[in-house]
Image (cartoon, rainbow, N blue to C red; front, side, top):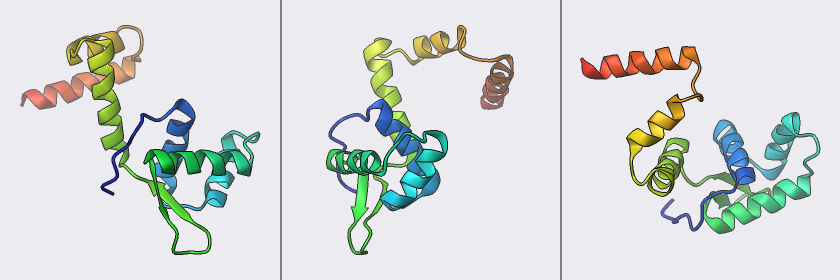
Length: 126
């Protein structure tokens, strides 16, 4: 768990991480079976290669004590998302979280999501 993530995940790696967070610790076979539900063109070899690269990058941990290696996300979803968000705020919004939120609210949030955000803001004021 102390392994430091050396690079940010690519889009394909983030997709696989989202799947891994849902599945929990899994073999390549388990991940492949789940992945082809949405993307039938993905081969076992592609998933294996991607998971091996992600392990090398520190995005996945690997338990080699069993015959089939069991992989798990090296970082919890909220922790990785927070780190990626901090990086985005720093790089794209000059460190301003307010500017990020304002950009997100302009055209990227549905009416229902706005109401949910407003409710959350109102609760924080209490």
